[in-house]
Length: 445
Image (cartoon, one colour):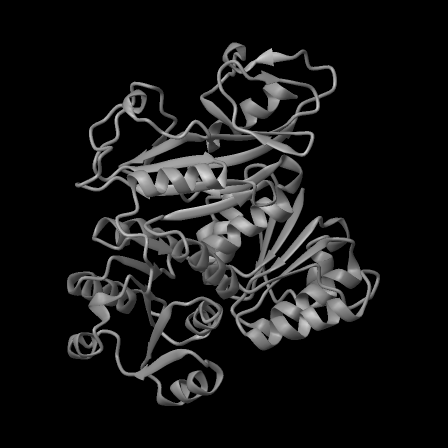
């Protein structure tokens, strides 16, 4: 696949690094210094502006499959995507940072059919993806990751093993999980492995479960949720993410506070949020946090545009007694570090955006539904071919460690056991390590 990336910022770098081994990548950026980071990668760089028609012709735009504009300038991304759409049949992906740009492009999309000349295929507003991810995590007490599959009939939950956990130092075979709950992965010291019955849960591990929603809720209530009574949410940072998050949470019965340092922004928040208490102040001000009783919040979400401030806010609220701190991280590389020093969940809008491109656009044909633990594992969706001979799950000789977690058959979801037959026409959801994806796909192919 030929992929042209306009923008050599962190987002463009992550996309290029992720895909250059399997695809023909061209990176365009007017800043020669920004392009130096690609010197050791087998890809092509062009130092220029991609809104120039001659530059797009130089990049062979007519044979491009995917065109991604991810610079820090919304208008430049839009123009480049429109040019690419005029000159090729490429799927266009346009990053925007302003809600107004996203809304305008969406309006064009809704008013005109796909043959319209000014149609951009995919508009990505990273802040919106981040908001959705935070919402999923907030609404499931104590979870560090939540994903839904099969139109909501199957779910993935991830929990951290704490010091007081009843699972601590227990082997998997000694745990009485619901029969429709599967432990598909364990993350320990930044490495993921697929467990067997003799695998032990250790303090600090992150355990990944898949199963039906009811079964996972039962498992969560039995082993992980210390208090299933979410009441108070504190949001530090009233920018796009903080505002969208508060607005979404206002449809619940939660009590919401939002702290924002900019007075004019507070006026906007007060005028547009109906049930949220808006506080003008600095989220790193310990006196303010104590005065507003932030320590008694069930969840604190730190979503300013500054990584250092988010980390400091998170550590302060945890010290004051907040049960869970969810933190925005601008640099993906620092997310793991944040969690090591005490942040419960660190999430990057860039990571969410790259996963969206990978799973929904570039590798949509590959059947990857979700990326787990920052790329350590994948959820595959594979349809069993018609000439496949029915085989019990226990008798499948898979080439690599993997868990067939969900079987979709005749409109029903089955959580398989060893004796469960895999039949032709079945749709399988498989959890496996990222490096084993190709081997698992080849086996079923």
